Length: 209
Image (cartoon, rainbow, N blue to C red; front, side, top):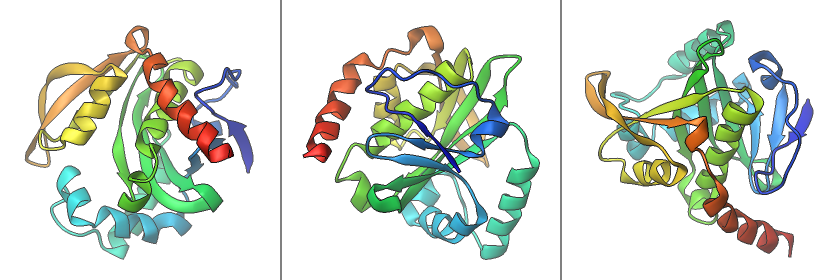
């Protein structure tokens, strides 16, 4: 599989990619690598999503069964507007997953969500911040989208805080699977990661020691 550099703290040229190409590319950051979802990661992802905190934040009423995970995988590969990445930490250790979906190139809009990370890894480094910045860089710089939206449970204050720091602004409320969610939107012109890059540079330099 081809690996593309995606260190958001450095100036790297934007490759000519679309959704299909990104499903066959590893994206290598400074701490995290985003790998296209493949069925061999299904069980690890299912186990992580079934943790109580993740079930709650994702409005997942019941634990996902192996059969349901298999069905989701089949549906995912039949779509052409959905990117699911598995997050790998140092040594290609499974760390979690994230998504950019409902990608509409004509309208220039997509939705991000489904970020789940192993707690012990997320607490040891700013993985969530780097992953979010990588995803938004793909959306705006690589795919040329104009807006990314996201929907978050009101109780998920950590994710709301991260979104606010990234520049997302409130855009109403919605219901997902019978649960109220807050909706946020970020336009490409309002995305300025500069204040957050110092955090990643610090960790990048520390990792290099």
